[in-house]
Image (cartoon, rainbow, N blue to C red; front, side, top):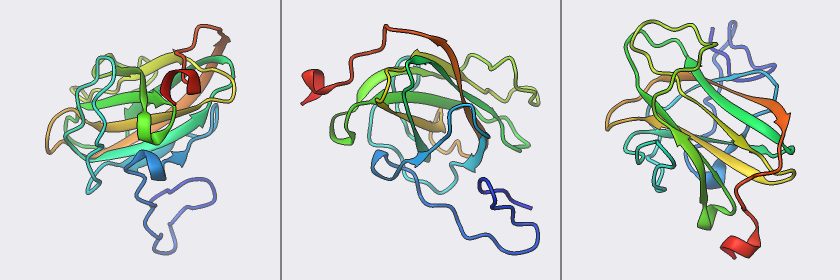
Length: 173
């Protein structure tokens, strides 16, 4: 069956479609150190923000999630989500307000060493210092036009840190 989050296994019935979390305004939460989310970029809108860090500008369907910083290094990791062909995903992380997002970082190709996947499927990860209480938006999208498919996203917490990208009103308001 298909899985759409905790307590939403669809083995015995048709699952309702997940919400279209394809913009910052309708981002879905993802739990730090919680279960990973399996999702797809198929049929989603293209994010209107530029790519961040090493990630390309979004030109394919996008999914957007958010986490609330906890004062540690957070790592957002993409992994094989059931695709049978090679898919090159990018990941970008932003902070601040949806109307004025600030780039925290992005990645388009270094492989997550903890992910087992078929050859040629790129599964990037990104680590950043997450300030306590700040909302971070994580965008997942194909590296080029028409690249869409399944992915698995997880966010894990690491060592405490104090060198976060400034995301408060003193920068963006």
